[in-house]
Length: 289
Image (cartoon, rainbow, N blue to C red; front, side, top):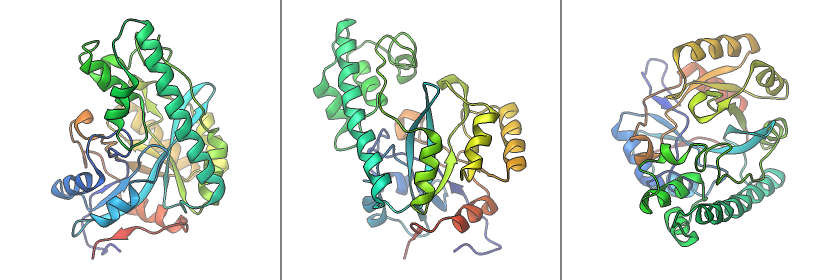
C-alpha cells in the first residue's frame, strides 16, 4: 500500500461530527489531505456511522483507516481504547457499541438536568441540536454551556466545577471494562491501541500495571505521541511499549474547531502502522482510486 521509499504522514486518531468533532467526515478528510496527511484514521466515539460517509468522500492520495474510540472504565475512571479495522458487524462488539451509545443519551440528559439545578439555562434541545445525528458527548454539553453564557471555553466546562471528572454536574454512564474491550476488538478482527494514557490535564493517567495487563490480553499499541503528553511521559511510554512488544503510535486527536484543526500535528511511523496492519483481519483500509 505504501512504497518503501515514500515519506508518509500517518495520523491515527481523529473525530468528525458523527461524534464530538465539529465537521462532517468529508470535511475532516479534505482538511487532512490539505495538511499533507497520507493516512488518516477516523475514530469517532463508540460509533462507525461515519465510515460510509468518509469512504464516499475519500479525496485522492489519502488512505482511510476505519476505526472507533471505544469508551471503557477502569477503577471508576474513564479510559479510551482506539480500535482499528475491526468487523463492524461482529454481533457482540456491535451490541456493546449500541449499549454505550444509549447510555450516552441517558447521561447527557442527566447532566442537563443537573446543570439546570445549578442555574445554568441549558436545555436538552440545545444539546441534541449540537450533536445532530452523531453520538452525543460532553463537548456538546460544553458548547451548550458556552451558548448559555455559563462558561467561556470548552476547557472551562471540563472542570470539577461543572462537567469534568468529579464535577457537580457529572453523571457516570455505562462503559466497558478495558480487558473485555480489548478482547472484543481482537475477536472482531481488529487491533486495539490505548489512547492518551498520560493526558494528565484531562485525568487520563493510567499506570504501567494496567498497560501490562492489557498487553497480556491482546493490546497492540500505546498512543505515545499525543498533544496532551509531555516529553517525560512520551519517553516513559515509548520505553514501556518497547519492553512489552507493543507499537508506539502518534495522533492528533483532532476534534476540528474544538482543538484548533490540528490534523497531522502528531504522527505514527510507517513501521508502527504496518505492524498494526499485519495484525488486523476484520476490515481493510480504504485507498482512494
